Length: 255
Image (cartoon, rainbow, N blue to C red; front, side, top):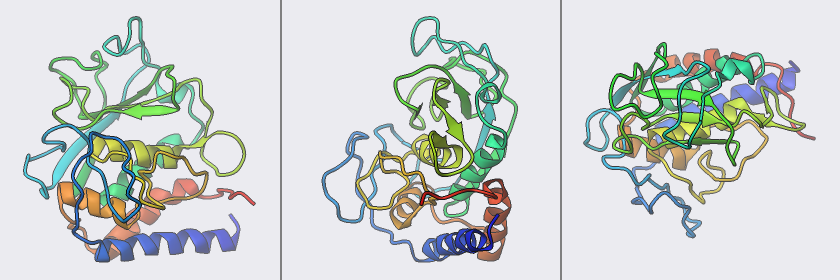
């Protein structure tokens, strides 16, 4: 990894910590989960109610479990014959480190605690019995990925994240494909309750950028509106983010 790139990544992490201390408390109410037209600073909440994990009251924290679905998990609730493919079957080496870092990115700015668990392979959207809150897997779909808003959105599909097995994913920047960290940060944002926004530079923009991105001031304000500010001291937050982003070592930026 080039020294200049190390410095840029470190500064980006520091910028996130600074933004987490100064994020405004303003809020824009949900617009049905679609992008708005106002380019002023704002965030958009998803359409589900209460629209968050944990206690229903806005601004309260949550402990959320997540895990990877095994190949063969029935996702017929989406379409007939749908079967999940495990991420390990089509994602590049290092994908799991980047997904963990994406969860850490949100935990570092809001009152969220993520616990990685083992998915029991029950059918997607099973009425009860799912072993983790956010279940992650892959199957063919029109887009590169999609996710489901938090409770109450379905039986147990709330918060689940699916990646397109036919797309190219990567752990670097530059060249073809979608960066795992960027896509995971975005999809986790949906799973936690944020919809698409037109706020410039937001990770919740509906348009993918092939460059290193972290939640910006609008993303942070939205997540804090749902879950409250993070309670981890800033030095510990920085260490958490730096540890989680080790998987980004050696990334290349576009010229």
